[in-house]
Figure 1 (tube, rainbow, N blue to C red):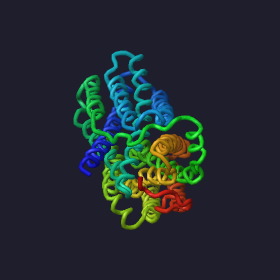
Figure 2: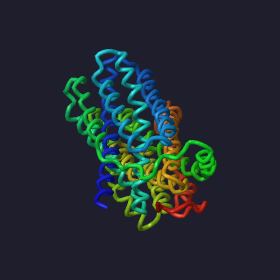
Figure 3: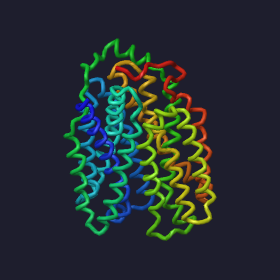
Figure 4: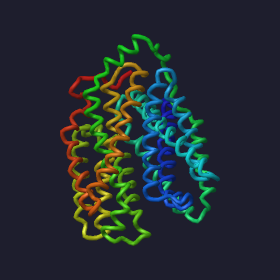
Length: 388
């Protein structure tokens, strides 16, 4: 049990590092924009490239999972994140900056997939849902990343590339090794792949798409909403994101206990209603403090959807460690679909008035009410339980 606790801490560190690196980069976007004289359209292109490359990295992790352990994939992904983030922040020339985008994007997808593979494997060992606390570690890392950016606002951009030291150090952590040899990639592997019940997994994936639509809309457009719609002071527009992350962290850290006590279905359904109320407050907010309260409520309501999605997908998939790893890597693609839809739909619908844009996630989040039943401990398909 001591060893398992050590592995659990290592994986939590990987989640926190991913959040730290990601928020460190996104909060430096204005500096990167000025450094390379990028237009708003070009910044959008950078973000789109990262998302698409992350999807490719997740596919790569799926293909490699039959031959390599998730621990090895996670280490490789963290090294790529370190190299890519370092290049993006400290690049001496445009070609190096573009190379950093490519390396970071692929590394992001590999770490996303492999860290959730590790978390699911540890959850199986525990025999109960613990993924919300892992995703809480990601949120904690993001908060630290935002705080570091604020504290180093006057530091030359090239020196901020030192954030790459963090993922490099964590890559050496004691991740959970694979307990069984890799499966043969012959007919048995193909049969196992065909046996995966994809329909219920896709329905759970739709729940994750909804989460990332709401999450991306809030984090991508929140600061713009405070600035353009409710006239918040420019120095305070980050309050659209920071309280959102803090509320998400609190609920995710409590999420393991909440699911144990009440079950995944009621927790998700209650969270969907809370998030809908929060988005309604944002949409109708007469002033920026009210809008900040709305974003905070949204963060609290929506935060456990993603971790419970990975738990449900792994439970439904069942089978060997290798098959579960492959399913989790493929399932991770819903992450990027939701992120793209959240950013695009909110912007397109709200191009004339951003209040209308937030009506989209406010309505779509209610899709979690019927979808929540597929997240249940004993789901409609009667899938295998969390024992190994």
